[in-house]
Amino acid sequence: MRILHTMLRVGDLDKSIAFYTEVLGMQLLRRKDYPDGKFTLAFVGYGNEAENSVIELTHNWDTASYDLGNGYGHIALEVPDVYEACENIRARGGKITREPGPMMHGDSILAFVEDPDGYKIELLSPSRAD
Image 1 (cartoon, rainbow, N blue to C red):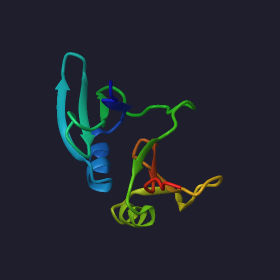
Image 2: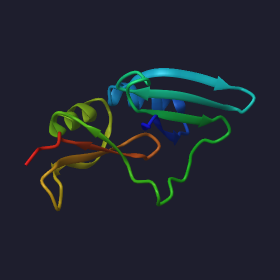
Image 3: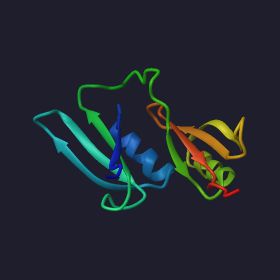
């Protein structure tokens, strides 16, 4: 077994695709409209779905926004350098919600960014073997 994808419901699909591709550097892997169901699915990621987990962006045509609730946590992305990633994300218009730095009760370097719908994305430095 393996994780295939994580699904997020988004209010503005084009804005979300732009964030994940232009700000976070993912690729739009596929996109399909389902007129009978009045929704569109778009899959984004850093590699093909056969070998990588991806994010499914679901846009229900009659819903402009969603309440994130209090159960959602975040998606985590490993980046070579959290500080540099935040500089690049900020330069491309991304919103940093937690500046890069050490984890409060550990030594991992991390930061948080927010997508157009308010979903949190954690940026983590590569794991260090102690």
